[in-house]
Length: 284
Image (cartoon, rainbow, N blue to C red):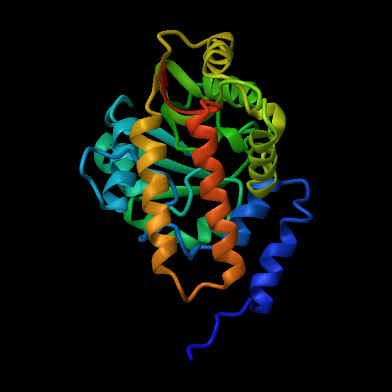
């Protein structure tokens, strides 16, 4: 009979961190996950991807999302990647924008270390910093990109104000985000929402609608704001892919697999009920 995978002391350490997220919840969560989260796509990708019909390769979908977001940024300019994950996206940003300077910002130094080789390949300068207090000069960049990170920031309006300050006239902000289009009305929706806020170290105040997010961007001084809802191209195929990864990982501890399966079921519920949407946003 095969041996049942057990929860190791390291697994317990990771799980215990979720009970005390501390002053920097996003850093706690992602340092706990490390660079080998068992259902994450390979090659250091952490985003959910932008999936084309019939596509089954998660790395391609993740790369497609980043390339789509990088396309509107000014070419041969200074680009700041705010919340750069494990660095897998930075070579793509560099290739698409041909940036003369690429700065990779992350609030957790651990992720910058994990992605050091990828940052070197992109010729990107690592910068450990808070997205709402960027240690960059006024009007020092022409492009800012942020992939699935804004919902972790302590304040979206503060990030938008910082982006406006750091960008030179005519600069472009390009980002993806997750919105909450209505308040959870039913107990299962409320439970799913509360569980995911805790799991990912999110503030309830950060979960707001696409309309509100657009208004916050305009209030920060941006114009020509475009918000594209692409939930069906992101969440549905990503949930299907992650579920298949989960089914294939029989060697992962049962507690991890049960938790991941519950998380994906909650995402699916919130998406089906129209509580959450996935957004692609550009502003200049």
